[in-house]
Length: 418
Ligand SMILES: Nc1ncnc2c1ncn2[C@@H]1O[C@H](COP(=O)(O)OP(=O)(O)O)[C@@H](O)[C@H]1O
Ligand SMILES: [Mg+2]
Image 1 (cartoon, rainbow, N blue to C red):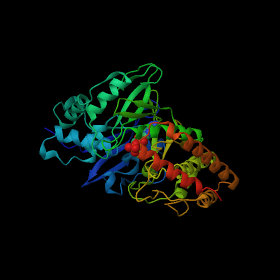
Image 2 (cartoon, rainbow, N blue to C red):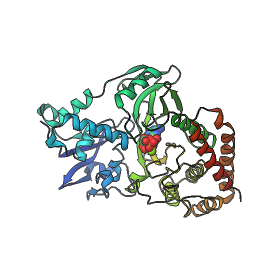
Image 3 (cartoon, helix red, strand yellow):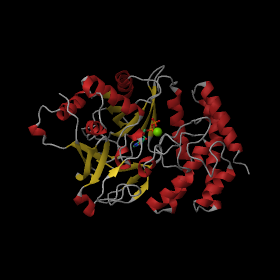
Image 4 (tube, rainbow, N blue to C red):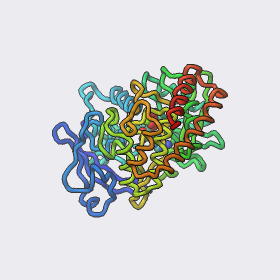
């Protein structure tokens, strides 16, 4: 019989460590997190802006992260993963337990969160063979069938298993070896040259060429000087495709702590609430690095010129090394996106719809980037975009989509002329 979980221990698992960070409990209907005394004494500052080390407990601020504080809300999956989890809870929990708490969700996620945190319900498992928590863990394990083999077969099978509900981009976490095309969903074993990858499939309503386009955008990001991990376009058949990217929150089997901008500031990523200047200031504050601020500015320029208007606060992240030093994560979710009503989620010096050269230069100025440096970055990205327009029609992108991409990028390039 399923029992709601009342305490979840939160561990730091970065770079092979396993150390208790603190405990998550419920205070009435609100989850609350407190750092452990030993972690307070000499632990890393995992979330320095909104959750600095202190004895008093923390509460989250908004419903879309289930009122979980920012450090922990980054471990919850968004759309697709949440949907799978809900499906799991509906299938295996009796109807009286429909109201699963966020503690149940984290216990379900266990060791498999992105980043470096892991979650364990607090009790001695050997004494509680029949408790809901153990059932939950067992069921979760049983729910994950393992697939291994050549990429085209396995990815086709993953699509069938996952289904493709409207609106959400299905994803899979795999180990992948590009040189041999070997792929497996078994993340627990060491497959020599295979490394951890994230695979994104199109949503049911989308044409397969969105994956090819995301892959071309990844190429363009790299050519524009952004830090883009290894990536690959998988052509699975007449109607199916996927985009794969190597994970930066794993180094082999080691885990790396990642914080999204949304988690770091504990803000709701669905509501536009910060702008690029605030983002660049966070980059400076965390990394103390002019090079990182300029790299983040380059990312902003890319998003403007290549029309990536899905630039919300969960699409930017920071990562922490073994010693507690922060850097920018590589870029991700670099895709054509026409935005909500044509607006960027983060505005550029006050302009969210049609940022121009002068908006970008003003942003650079406010963020303490030299104007000639900013000019050079804008020119480089513009030149990559011009080359892209000459070759996009060589690729098999759905015509209606490629026409929109060309139209929008041309207009953005024109706005870069002074
Ligand atoms: N290369 C990567 N390594 C590690 N985590 C990643 C990587 N790419 C994306 N992510 C994480 O996975 C989440 C979903 O990926 P994203 O490309 O943003 O998909 P979607 O298009 O569904 O938003 C991101 O918010 C980020 O936290
Ligand atoms: Mg995203």
